[in-house]
Length: 349
Ligand code: COI
Image 1 (cartoon, protein in one colour):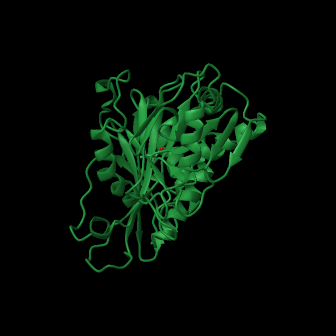
Image 2 (cartoon, helix red, strand yellow; image 1 turned 90 degrees about the vertical axis):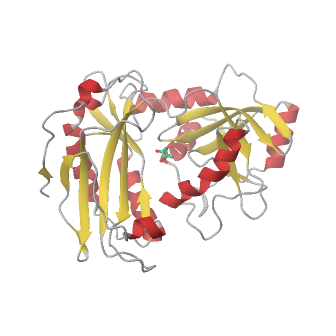
Image 3 (cartoon, helix red, strand yellow; image 1 turned 120 degrees about the horizontal axis):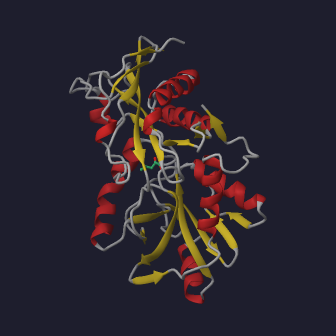
């Protein structure tokens, strides 16, 4: 597979303050672009990062025919580059695409294109736990026509952004009682762009009350805890760790499934089951609730300091033997090539 590369004349890296990065605001010098036309994906190209032009009638603008992924590249102290479970990302991208009637991308384009792009952006990836390059692969429907039907033309694009923490500061969450993120038979399991836009309004209401995120509950009863929108969610009751099973409403998070595996292998009592708001509040009242944390590529593992449901507000206790800290550390050690990786999750590129 040939990839045509047009490098930038001058890199902008010298203007970037890597010690003070707001998540997702700075982009590297290059991007990968691959077009789908006449029933096939063409050869990808790498070009300077910059604006692209589209027909105002492109379907992505009208019908939201768009899917994305989130990944990170890590650098170890020897300067080697790694990805975490990239096979899972390309498979999920194509699963999301299928649901949005977008043609599947050949995995070779994803893997080879990304490796080539990352080698070009090597200087943007800083070593040290917590530094990474956030990778955003996405597919959009570019064919112009305001007909509400799948496009015949698409672009697969990868852009990259140097990253540190996703959430700055403490995170408290509101438990959803009115709005829903997804429903049975819907697109909740897909990384469809619209799943995120649909959360912005309810989340902005939560912000006004001082909550950073919403924990979404099942759309039918609002009784069961599902996911936090940018993260999957774990609850620790005593020494038991609980997370909701994935289904067609919940994103099958790669960090989530890695934590489930690590917890099981470390002998933690890991329960993947429906978990109700009632059970959560009872555990909070009795003192059995030790931790809540979110997991995701961008956020990694993020402790939740408190939550609100109805008129009731709960604060989480301080724990000395935090599961969140333990599994975050374990994951980062695998990702940054600090510890052995018995799972084959870390892929050198
Ligand atoms: C990720 O964790 O990579 C995601 O895709 C969530 C996004 C909203 C930052």
